[in-house]
Length: 445
Image (cartoon, rainbow, N blue to C red; front, side, top):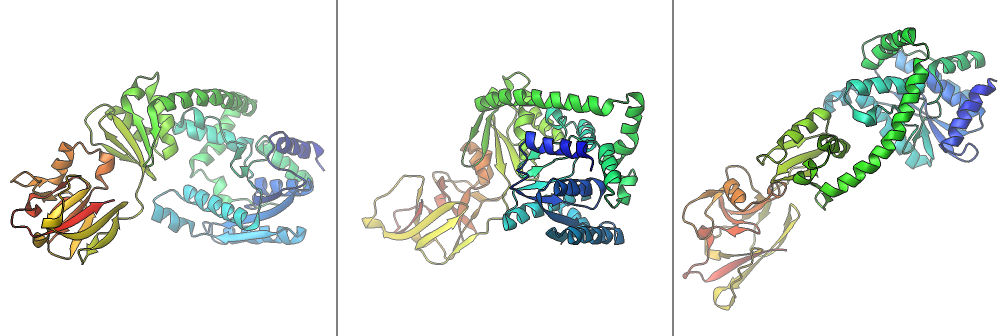
């Protein structure tokens, strides 16, 4: 038994408080490759309670199936609980318009999380090593990932822990040979089709020719960056509080306050990257700050809306809000977070209300069924007090409705005509006149 290797991994686990070797149940992600097989065997020799999770991504045909069989045989030999899941990874990547690598990563970690919830595993052990972290450093350097990306791979990220992060691939291979730990070789790792493989197979060997201790030096630099980033984050948090406000609809950024800060573009990057915005999009957002309103930018999950010196960050709506048909002039109805209540009143016994949340319409001019729906481009109506038609888009601009609220403005429509821009203005065509006998009262609550 190579005690120095085991000691090094055990020290990593204990010093970083990754989990309790004696008490915790650890789910180990096992591909069948050298790194994951050494991780699994090491944790087993240290006396950890382990279970195996193996993903068959169906990307290498018979080779992928062979990996699965290999891992299953190891689990059977040592009586270790095992979970197997197959994914149509290429199909998922195409449907979601993401890379195969990203699709595989998302599928893997989502499934690991489900296993933890179902079986009570304390953490998820992944076999990333020191070389993987260095490769990630260079990948992020090429992607302009900022100070955050240059820290390499974290040793802990939520439930995910990396006990081999401080050992090199060379140490792993030496331990595998000494312990006669069998493993499978992924043929795709031997090609240079991916950026990571090019860094692994071309760039790092060249660097080692130039500076034999480059692995240690780069790792030391990443450790310094991690310490610096902790201090950096404290300052960013203080600046963020100055210019950001969290509301029930999302985040509001005071653009004037933001641009007054030193290195305001860097501050904006640190705020927005957590919402999925990439570097190029954040640069475009920064360029429109304090300029003409109306620009909207999107990440995979959020929208950034620039409007009147405020940048709104909101979640994308998951579904289209369907119109609501109303057949009778009574009852309550819900649309886009608004509740509308209808009733009929006799004009002679009804007190007129001027609140914007109440529409009092000439009942005889309404044709049922009527419709509640989100407004759309091209909608027009005759605002109360006017004679000519006006586009609702122009009306909302005149009313200085923020862009963030425009997308949820509701209209009440009768026979193809808009009777009320809900909560704002009724149409002159449906207003009460001297001839009115009955009033349709519509309340926004």
